[in-house]
Image (tube, rainbow, N blue to C red; front, side, top):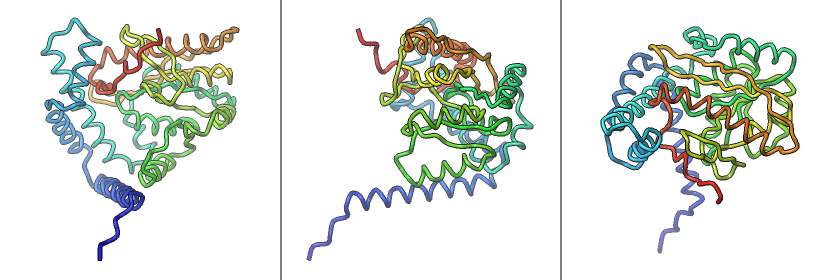
Length: 308
């Protein structure tokens, strides 16, 4: 008698359970991993991985050449290797520190733009939220934990395809005080409620994501499809948009608070939002130019060309 075939649904459940088990095991292992060793070993793995000529590494080289056409091959290769080394360090260091309370982590962080930070906190106390623009630069997970220690936080994100991993990520992020998660498919109302409550509403808006409403703004002088949602939320709510990033500088984590800016309110809503996204993307670009190894250069940032 023939054996019944395993259904795709059953196989997906098994794969999801296994992925969740691996992630939880890694977090348990991370609790006993010394931060210094995690930093060293993550960098070692990342450096080795960056030297390969697989798709992600080759994409990073291609994108770096496009952003810096005047740089030679040696510079491109060095930044590629450092790029993967940085993200290897960030991943293992974060794994070793997920269990630490945000207040403990915050004590080791340097703040750039303290006046801009104080302006955001004052607005929060007036129950006036702030739309935080950030990106996949430096250490964005640490940035969320630093935010939560300063003011009530709402994070905009996407649901993971694997429900076990999604549940684990929610568990980690909601362990932060005064934090909530708003999924991209929930619409605009939860985000507006969070702003009316005085929350910092944080979004990573530096990637080409086809399912989102996009506008083309310059990124290293080349039009790049960019999620326009943060600027639209700032315009609708009347709240300021503020660029904030966490990156590595001088051997320490630095949280950089940029200036606050309101969205223009003319008859052309799309043009207003696009102009604000162009400004904040240009601001972000200047940080990436100073620390190119800390952005995700394997991402296909110029994947969607403008419509002719």
